[in-house]
Length: 129
Image (cartoon, rainbow, N blue to C red; front, side):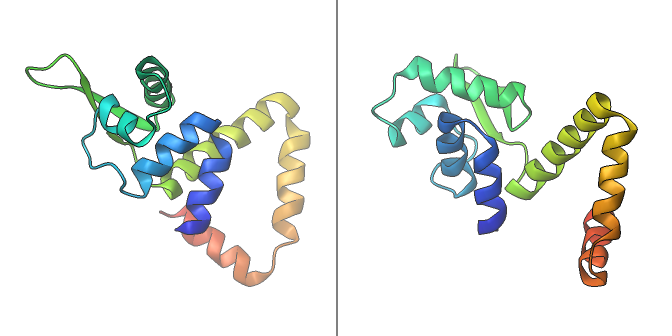
């Protein structure tokens, strides 16, 4: 998981990464509020953490639920770092195909052809998840 966590955090912006590190490592318990995250990042303004968490929700990394009887939303992770990496890599691959067309597909095929059998089997298992 540490490898997936580190890779996932590299994809996110600095404040997003700090927030998701707290979430994915269990430093905040789900469901959590902006104030829960702010307690871990006291040097930041409430509105900064709020904006960061809203952006993470917009990206599908967090899920925001209206808290019953409260004004504040409650948040939870949409998935683990591996789930995020799978979704993000799919999005990035689709963007590469959209931008570069068949050249991107040919590059992907060349990369697959160069894989060792063990790595190819591992990818098949990942794909079938």
